[in-house]
Amino acid sequence: MITLTAKTTGQIHAKSARITANTLRVRLDDGREVSVPFTEVSWLKWLAKATPKQRANWSIEPGGFALYWPDLDDGIEVCHLLDSQPIA
Image (cartoon, one colour):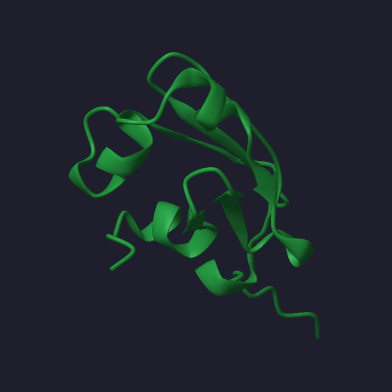
């Protein structure tokens, strides 16, 4: 018998991301895309206050568990995006 189990948020990883003027869009390895209006989310104020150049300089952490902005020394874990929970 084959049983399907859903991945937990800790098992889902980012494959790609893009940033528009006020939205972070993250494509996940399970095929979904999460869109977050970072200008409207209180725990992402640091990203909203960043310059376009700072926001453009990001990377996906090894394994895809998070996005990181070296110029801002901050990042977002995929599980927090899915749970809509603050990072700290």
